[in-house]
Image: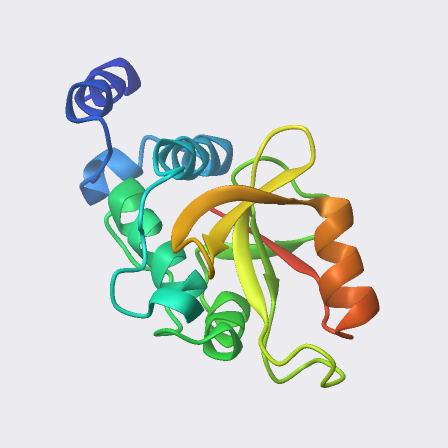
Length: 165
């Protein structure tokens, strides 16, 4: 099976659940792009039907499952997601995010001014897609600048980026 065949499979399904053989054809930029495209396809949808208002990790995992066939981890917690991202070999911590990279400001690492952390996926033009806890939808609802102001400057959280490999 070649990349063209796999991309046709993805286009026909509208989403992508790859076998290990199919995943082996992709490099990091391809997997990052697949994650990005699935996240874009989910804009305006309820991707966290269980956790609802604190559903950012559930939404992220549901998108990852649709895109790659595998959840990222962490259950429903940004704290545990952060620990998973640091430990699993299919993700690498990076400094300069590209679209499809994961952004996380984990609960338990802030100054207490903001109670909960958050996670999302980097989009185009400095935007970030994440679960909106009020609208209960996956949206492009932050920019890198507004995320940093809210979570780092106000909440004291780290702002970390991870790339799928």
